[in-house]
Length: 121
Image 1 (cartoon, one colour):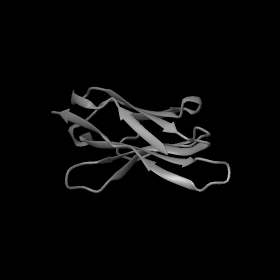
Image 2: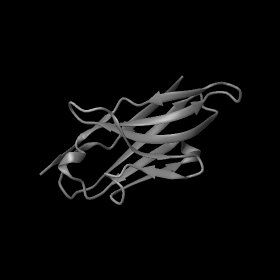
Image 3: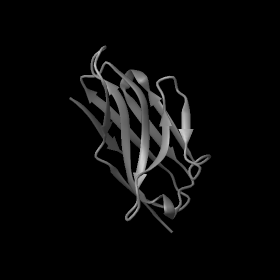
C-alpha cells in the first residue's frame, strides 16, 4: 500500500510564499510523474504542476513564473514552492503520483489527503 502525505499549507497574505511537501511511503518500486492539483470551493480540481522522474516539468498558465515544482527521487518526495501568492490561489492542494509497486505490476494513481492554502488580500 502506498500513501502520500502532504504538509506545508496554511494562511498567508497576498504576495507571500509557502512551500508544500509531499512524501510517498509504502511498497514502491518506482514513481513516474508526481504532481500538484488544487480545488477551490465550488470549482473542479485543476492541475497546478507536474514533474517526471527525469525532472521534466509542466505548469498551468495561472501559476507559471510564480510556482516551482521539484522532487527528490531518492526520497520519493515532491515539493511546490509558491511565491507571489494571490487570493485566487486559495484552495485545497492535492499531491498526486503514478506509482509502480512491483517491476511488473500496474501503475497506480495515488492521491494525498490534501492541504489547505488560504491567501488573504
